[in-house]
Amino acid sequence: MIPIGQGRPSCRRVGVSWWLHLPLIGALALISSCRTLPPPPAEKPKPVVTAGQEPVIRVRIGTGVTQAQVHANGPLTVMAGSPEDPQSTATSLMPPVIVRRDAIGFSAQSQANGQVLRWRAQSVAVAPPAGQLMRVNGTVYPGKLAAVIHPESRGGVAFDLVNHVGIESYLPGVIEHELYQSWHPQTFATQAVAARSYALYRLSQTPPGRHYDVEATVADQMYGGSSAHGTAVQAVRDTRGVVLSYRGQILPAYYSSNNGGVGQDVRVVFPKHPDLAPLRGLPVDNWGSTGQNFYWGPIRREVGEVSARIAAWGRAKGHAVAGLRTLSSVRISAVNAGGRPTAFTLTDTSGRSYTLSAEEFRFACNQTAAGLGEVPASAKLKSSFVQAIVQGRTVLFTGGRGSGHGVGMSQWGAQAMALRGYKFNQILAYYYPGAELKRLY
Image 1 (tube, rainbow, N blue to C red):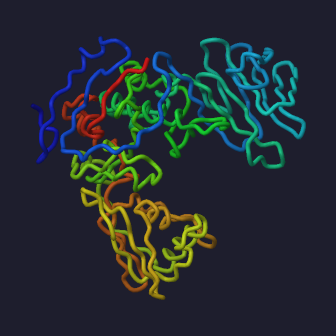
Image 2: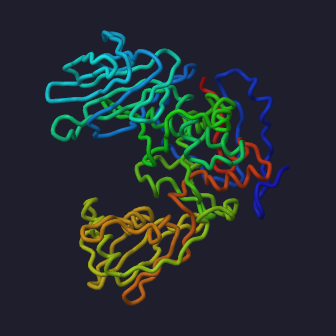
Image 3: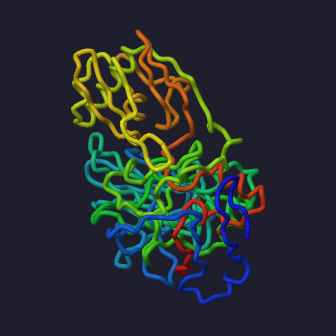
């Protein structure tokens, strides 16, 4: 038996070395829970990619651009349509190649010899020589590039850039940017499984007709293109194809920088998401207590400024809180099993009250508003794990804990566990209790 955390029940060790030799498809290791969970809900995520083959994920790396310069060590293959379209006629152009769009369609011009190709098409694809990388607007990427008409094109010429890349080539460029480069290899392995699980879940949920699966930003996961970071590359290799699964379906393994000691329930952050047991908040978790923003604040802000931002958020979201006048009180009106706020009730000077979820309250307080601009970094709420007290003309945000939404794994917590000798499967067991590790390919 190995203690999983001070003052908490212990967890059974799940071996690491032997399970890598099991058949590729099927359960590799059941990661056990350290706490009693309520019965799982009836809802399930949709099925994920077919097991047995590494999938390609489409990552939007640019939106609303008007030009893309693509370079590679050899001729670039260009064609109308998608990089996976076998019916398109491909042509070679010497790099660098400039991709543009006008009122007629797309064009690709070789800067080496001036050769120009044009298409009346919704998208064009560019691919480097087999096995090579490409440089797009200064950043190196694996895989292929698609330029796709942007739905809200400015003047009819803007388009999106989408990197079509195998998931295992995508992941090093994620975890290098999600973690500090000096962190423990087991933290990187933990992050690799969580990031792969999240990405493949998102891939399975892509609406029909959308030309990308994930963003390259914090809207999904940070992605910086090709990575040569040794620890990141090795972590992806060591966990190749391994994902978190719950009730036979892939688990969207959400994570945040630091949960401040108590995890958040997934339905608080993502109201339409199935209420999955492994994504309910951990009641007490002090693993990240030495990390950044485990505790933060107090922050004092002018009550009129905060009120104006919340009302502006309400207008932007079509929420009744758009009618908020000057705040007179803010109280935590609901908490989860660990005592973390899940809802706030706001009352203004007219006596009207409005209830926001915890994350809605955070985003509303951080809303950019006309005449106020952005909230300075030092005054932003880092999480919704906070108390807000109206004191005359100011609002005191106190008791702040954590950074990010708090669902699933705490990255600082994972690092603390790795430094204490825990392996990636044990860390995943702690933060996603009741889930399994499975290899899809």
